[in-house]
Amino acid sequence: MKTFTCMDLGAPTCTHEYHVETYDELMQQMQEHVAADPIHEPERQAMAAATPEQKAEMDAKWRATFDAKPDEV
Image (cartoon, rainbow, N blue to C red; front, top):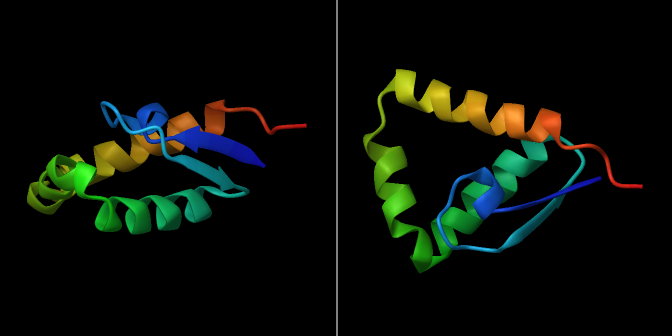
């Protein structure tokens, strides 16, 4: 199990926590949270306007963050 906050993933102020086993779980929970929380309007707009290359860069950054975090004991 790994725990992340939105701030860990690049959001400026949100401390919402994700408790996940896999990167895919993290992405699913993050997408659901960002879609539902009005604080993330800037992130929604940025993601909607991103080019495929920019989306790939975001994914690579989030995956590296996930991979670098050790499993909780």
